Length: 119
Image 1: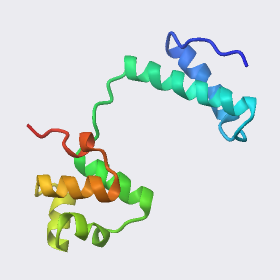
Image 2 (image 1 turned 60 degrees about the vertical axis):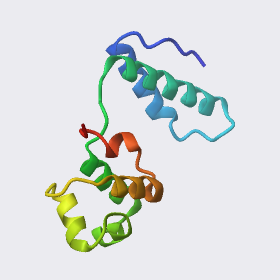
Image 3 (image 1 turned 90 degrees about the horizontal axis):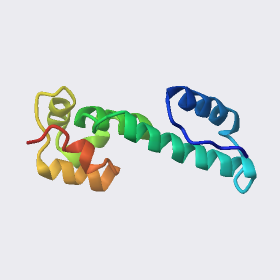
Image 4 (image 1 turned 180 degrees about the vertical axis):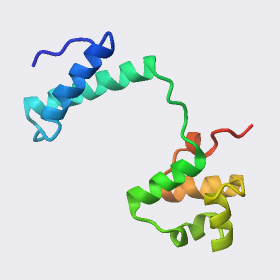
């Protein structure tokens, strides 16, 4: 394993290419160790050089829906009746603090994403 610091975007691209080759490495192997170190280095470089900012609340909800295979009806316990879910997903209604708490607790969506843009 020959890992070097990521100092610029060219180094970053090389790290990504290597990561693609070893991403499916079996746990407990030296390739898996290399993968874990590369992921840490890539994240550190990106956090320092790129400001992605917190996700948009509606996009964060839609992303979790996609990840979990959820439908708008599945959001009713967290947001309310179907009309309210539709309003939130179509950006016609803002999330209340109660909705934010329920979405965080129930779907593990980070508060940082759900509260983005709230002043």
